[in-house]
Figure: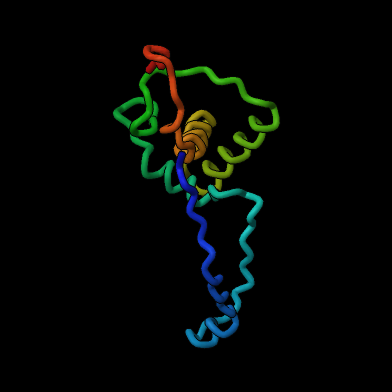
Length: 128
């Protein structure tokens, strides 16, 4: 049986933002971060798409994705959000990206955080 190690050391003292800003000569910009967007911000997603989108003469695709297209069913609310994101990237950022490419990037970001190393499968039950 594995032993669980718990850190019971003293908590680190939190920094006072005002004193740090004063020491560094900074000032409040009034910019607030919207934490409701989750761990993947629109900017991070944009960078991922820009870095991975490439064209070999046809429709641009995400580098590293499968060549075979897969069909995925979307909830209506998610589809509307993806459509709004697509319009944002096209109209505001000039990035010609599809809903499927945005969905693929979001799925990749979510799935990459899942640790499957502890999942036990019967031999030959895992398909590529």
